[in-house]
Length: 153
Figure 1 (cartoon, rainbow, N blue to C red):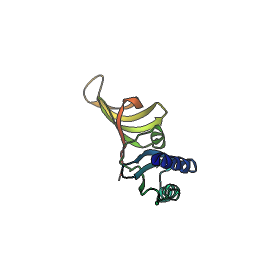
Figure 2 (cartoon, one colour):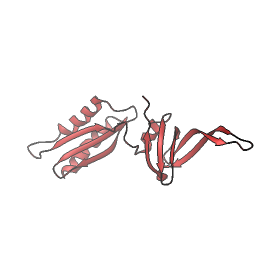
Figure 3 (cartoon, rainbow, N blue to C red):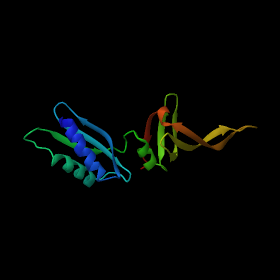
Figure 4 (cartoon, rainbow, N blue to C red):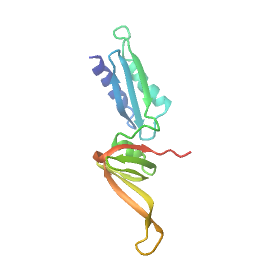
């Protein structure tokens, strides 16, 4: 009952902020509520505060004691949803599938797959030495074990 009430408040709050989307939502046995958000344009402190208030101000602590955490998906968190990939088009990703690890620029993301592009050094077809070639691969979401944005400093 408590979890359903919190979920309803959370969904209503997210409807009012369409650029935000839910990554994870849990209510533990001790009534610790954890909400992890992401956004098409990122998530700032005000976004977290707004969602937190929308939940907290509509629950009665006299009825049910609870703790509430609203956070953004961290920069080093793995990408989970197609919407997260779409917002990261143009950035460099490290993608692990069952049998390989690829690093490249995310050039496209649909509901079913992503497209990675990168440069690789390969042996020349004729003669000695290597040549740089442009590689491109489509990877289905179902084949992705883990994907993270590579941060540059």
